[in-house]
Image (cartoon, rainbow, N blue to C red):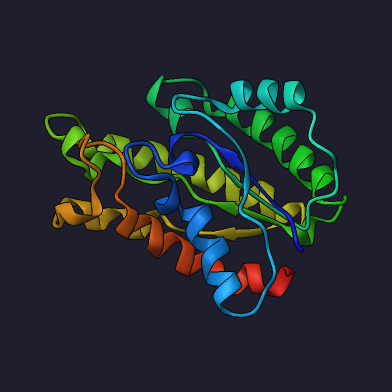
Length: 198
């Protein structure tokens, strides 16, 4: 049985949706449907976490470095709190090295997902959506560069999250996070890359 570790924040735990609708859980289901024996993800994630908070939580949990697949989706709370991009670059780079270590030391076993653009959600109404999008794009550009330099696959889910602006079926009941339908789209985008790993 292959093992899977999901690292992140509210988007990884699936805030405001049932556990079965988390994109990582849906990804595991999709993999099993295609004949890959993989367990449900071990998840280290919490709503509101920044890169530094996730790093502290991983250190406290001290998971074994034996996972066949590790996914990392982090950074929205750095942007939301107005934390410096320079700090994110440093902390994300350190987190990615931790993810690689936990994935048996192999960067090919790690997938990084981009940060969703929450400005397109109802919660983003009345805010400067262009600024939010520009800041998230800058964070994502940094994450993509760091991931590619480390030999890690980067999956850009951000364009999908723009659908929330026109279609509320992609939005969870809280008006900020995403529904299981959106999580499914992320899982479908990650599926081909996860199959290469497992």
